[in-house]
Image 1 (cartoon, rainbow, N blue to C red):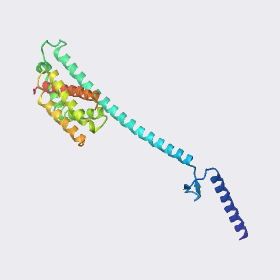
Image 2 (cartoon, one colour):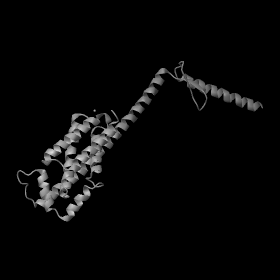
Image 3 (cartoon, rainbow, N blue to C red):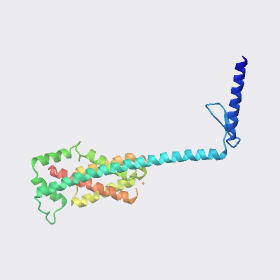
Image 4 (tube, helix red, strand yellow):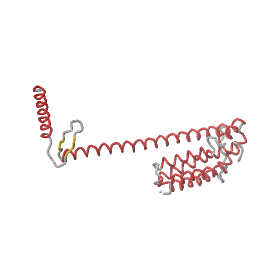
Length: 240
């Protein structure tokens, strides 16, 4: 019993010394924090608390910045992918034009629409069949897939900000006007349906809730390219 009593006394004394040493290392204040592992109450200085708070705030800020960077990287990747798809199809169309025209230059006075009508007359059955597949309901240049690409491009260029949806809608309409002028006459019905579908998607995204002019110009430019490519496939398919 005596040994146990001495041991208990030494243990209590040791704990007291440790607590005193811990307390001495800090500037006492009125606010106390409890160490969960020992049950010992330790008071921290205001400077220590402010430093801890600042470190926590910096960590939170860094995390938020990383999230923003990740979102921007995702938007950049999407824009790059959509641009690559558009460039690839545009090149495909240009190659087809060169092939069907036999390397001859376009005649003066021809509109783009007239050029593709001439190409359609010279197209082989395989090319016509592929064009029909492209503009079908589930085709790469059908209303749904084309409008979805236009919608995703507009979203990405706006910084994924729904408050800018109205400016994106205006940019799509501007692109339609530019595409019509480049085509030389009214675009095929499929193009108007595609624009209508794109605007509907943007309106739904807007969520009742406007992008800078540079982004709007880019959306208009992409809209023109998408619609021009779609109209070309439509014409080659022999339905316009």
